[in-house]
Length: 183
Image (cartoon, rainbow, N blue to C red; front, side, top):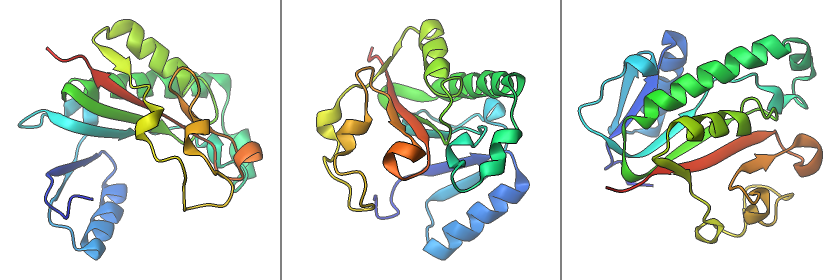
């Protein structure tokens, strides 16, 4: 989207996942992506960011239609641990967002513990952040799939983007756009 002119930091704690990412970046011929093997809580960038994407580790219960056995891997206790880690990561990356920047939080889960509940907990603690509830700035259609005709319909009144396998014939996802109030 930027013609390889933006500075992009990809922070990944797993060396194996970072290796896969490096292969993908190399295959795309991108030179602007700096890859860092680190826990996001320990990452100290030289400057703040205008845009942050946190694709948080999750239960992957949103891919249940492609991987039905995932339902047997998670108990309420496991979901609670995911919730705590996701909230911890969201809090850590939020420190690097510049005022009026955009932070996109996403998980491939249908569970509120990993989506709405994480955001509500975060916003309760971090009062300078808010949900960007601006569906008008989003494209109204999606040419990537036949099922979703209007992307705006996937965003509820609270500003949460949510898909369900049984409703949308795609994986289950949760996403929300957050911003920090300007000074």
